[in-house]
Length: 461
Image (cartoon, rainbow, N blue to C red; front, side):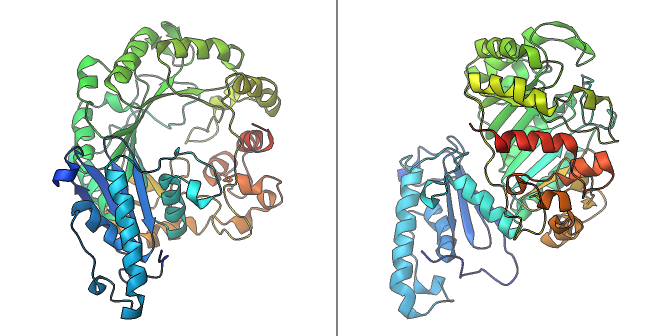
């Protein structure tokens, strides 16, 4: 296939389309989400999350095939090429149409999202999208903190305060349209605790109508049958619930009454509805010795994925008491690793970057951005470098490649001497955000981040 030689124009062109299929061959499909980037095309089936991704010149006809089964490309669709290339172009287009027809019929080759194969034929479409996005500074992910208010006060929480109610619904609509224009595919809605907002149902519905694949992050305590029923049929790609205890009662972790039984019942209702629910457990000194009990208890609720996360980030206002919860390198290897192996849950970190060629140490600001409750836009949730504020600036300009590059140009891998001499340098993202908050200097790595990165990079699965 033609690979990347065709461009829509010298200026990056991104269009957004939320397509409702009406062709008689495709009536089984309610809708799909598509994105047409500079020289790539993404299609995601909303009901199954099957995905296709094309990169290269011929990909610009892919959207036509999705909308119209009878579309026939002509040489005039490819003014950049002469007639001598038409036979090759037509063959490329024929192969694209076959793949799209199989995709829409539910018969295309599927691969796990986290496939780590180096064979290009065995890399999932979402991985190929990620690779494309990071190399082209193409935004595909937006993390939106709807509020800093929360019903818990966890000792290891990263929030600096709990008083910001967040952007208004009108401001969130303005932001959503800007994210559409920028080509964002996935929006992660979180807090604080997002369900503290009385208008949370309207927000979720709004971002659903705007055509995003949604990720919901919550502690699950404020859900109820009515709120859960409103989620049915929405394009929720991932529904993540953080778990802090496994019994009802006053919690030393959340500094409040922890309603575990209610949360467990909410999990069952969500799973029964068919939502893609996953659980997240922060791992530290407070629970490392009872992880087996936690795991067994959670698996009895529902047989769903559980992510055990040993990385405890600092409070945004600076290093704080949350550091006391962190596992040492010895505890990671001596206690956490055996637990993961007992449950076949250890995944070794693969190559993240090539330090000999990369300029910026991580992907923050390249394929992702984050927005806090005040409207500040950051390269990611952990990096306190403000790109702009959507309340006071032009959203399209704030999200532009130029603005994001400018924000990230001060964070260069060449300035990080310790990282460049580290044996796992290509498997780590050298989180400059955590380093900046903890050390006041992004060039010196944060010790805990190093311990966690080495844990995943040096142990065998």
